[in-house]
Image (cartoon, rainbow, N blue to C red; front, side, top):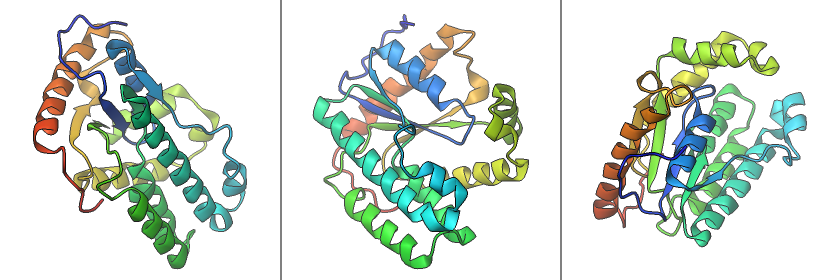
Length: 229
């Protein structure tokens, strides 16, 4: 898919897609990359040595898993910027600490000592003026019912067996996280406002908004240092 919309999105831009499970991050990542002729960056799960252990024992392996994710995402972010940008990322480095590690701590599957150690490491690595933050984080939003419908429609066995209460908690945690997020500029998109699978042209107004956001943010936030997550 190549967009017919005229835009001046810099070819070295880095755009991150964020949002709760089932909201369509991968679909949006691929659509934007195709429209802009950008490269994609997806989470690597096949080579993760902790996932199986983690699902068998949350308390034993939650800290290890989060440290692994932090290291891998940090290396990927560094690689993207060393390459010269021009990337769309599926999921951000910020969600692990703002949502998942925090959830493990609050639910008692990560100790306070481990959580504080993780947070300290994350802040030292990521929340500094030296870390290359994305030009834009696109947050895919929508009603809980709409997102739950998408999850059930794609029919992944593990997701179908997951209680609805879990998806609601994850949805609420994402809403709280994005409402307090300031590590880089944020552009919200409601998933009810486009259908890039059945209507390729629905990407065009999104590209126009991205163009405006990035040019505005590069003017005024080039030297911005985030204060918190």
